[in-house]
Length: 433
Image (tube, rainbow, N blue to C red; front, side, top):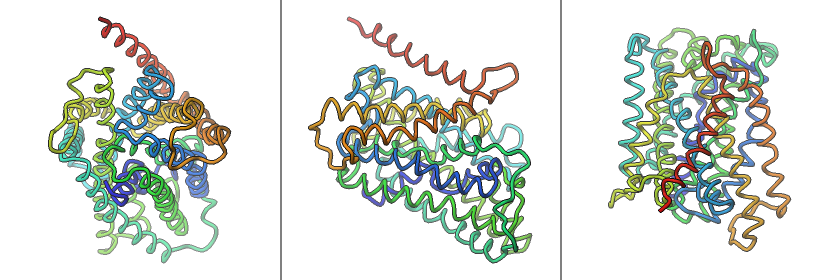
């Protein structure tokens, strides 16, 4: 993968398109959403990108963050890192088919009615798996084309929104039920995924030079893509209560009316939302499927998961196994999926920051083409803001029930974390001669 392909793939792994941001406006209003989307990268995305740049250039191996944790803190923590990432991916990967169906449902409700929406979602997961069997280069280059196609309608919508601006300060408009922590959770999800590109480091061209440049370019691109369309729509005075999951087409209709040009843009935005969901699902399949393959190479999972296509080097058994697991978690709502994803994946990111510190202590002479400045103190300090933000979101996650009479999101997350500990020691017991 070249620099261009890695930037594009990282952009999709993070979900750098504005699709999925609607809930941030609905929960926090325009001023709250814009502030959240500008502050979150500073205390969540940028520190993570710095950590990924150092560790990816120091240890550019397939398996990425699993390799970092296993080498720095031992096989137990390596297994927990991979477990949290894989379990978190179950909820994360269910989000993109959910968004796809949401956008399609806004445009053609009858198509997704009944059980047809679930069938389409399963078909999307299968399509991404088949696409990934063609190899990492194919996925990376296709991400470039996806990215160019997705940016165009938001440029048009933003220009039209500025043209239809209303007098007065519209940033003060707020939703009826303000939920700032809920908005932060959605923003954190939209700024997650920087570490996912590390799992394909073995397939990146000149990774020691490519990763830092790709991370810097992707962070700036994502932040710009998120804030500009929302700020432009805010100028029109559109009520924040009219924003909902998958609702960019409804926003365009409210801003532009029902004319021919508006209808055309709505169709493009709806198609773009569906394309964005498919593109991200495709890019993340590339990332997550490498984890079980790397763990199987180390004997922590069944050896069959390490089987690779001799022509493309794709771990095809791992791809198909992951796709099967993701398809089984397509029933939860968007908000609940985000909460579980942020909790589990956020903890795995904290383990990666711990790996950064542990490697600085255990292997100070390890060549690091990119190094976070400040020595050991700098390595510790860069992980503190993400840890504080994750602690705040855990409070919000605790208040969210998963259903009548069931666990809340925090309790289910704790159970899944405990299962990782049990799974590791069970595997050790089984592997004993």
